[in-house]
Length: 236
Image (cartoon, rainbow, N blue to C red; front, side, top):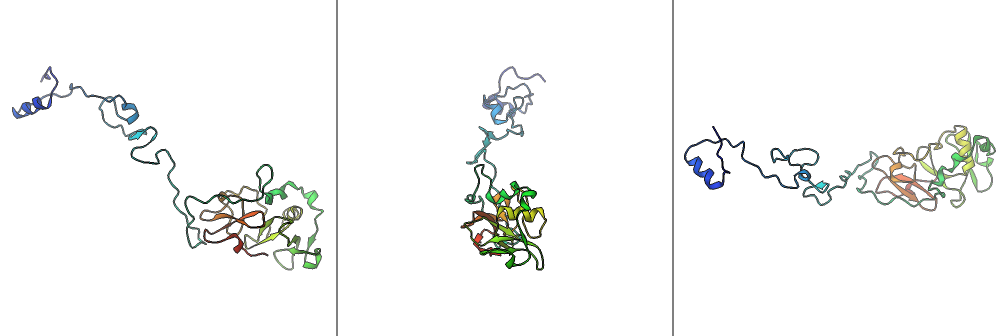
């Protein structure tokens, strides 16, 4: 059937339907809004395309006040913690760094094994000088001398985060060159590999659910549960 040569208005359509007539509406023009491209509307049908821009205005989600921002990260609870880590995480801790922003606890890697050979090893406390002690995992065993004064050397985690101790960069390098057990010889940044009690300089160094907190007066950060303090990690 030939279409009507005029546009159908609401009254004329109602009148036509009342007469029981049928019409071909394929040629009835559809008005496309000028911002159809931004609104994801098809120029052929006037309907939302359902593509990437559908329902999106000015690059954000329609009706969403934080449009264009990444979705919030769901709180994660570490298996060793009583509560989940907050979201968003608190500010990163203030730790000692060098001029390049590298944490001082990572400086030992700048020392070659040839240089580190000058640092003495030990098997008992009496092997070290006054104010120092032998840091070793097992007795009998071999360790290096560490200093009890926090202001002399930065702290380090020991025995997979069981405790914290102080050591010189030279002694740390000697322990890692010799492969002595208990010493943290990882390369920083750790990328979510630090377990509870281990070293960190940022939250991203810790396993999910842990936060990096400064251990006061030590110049380093330690990964702990959100409700704990880095001082809760004991001295070796």
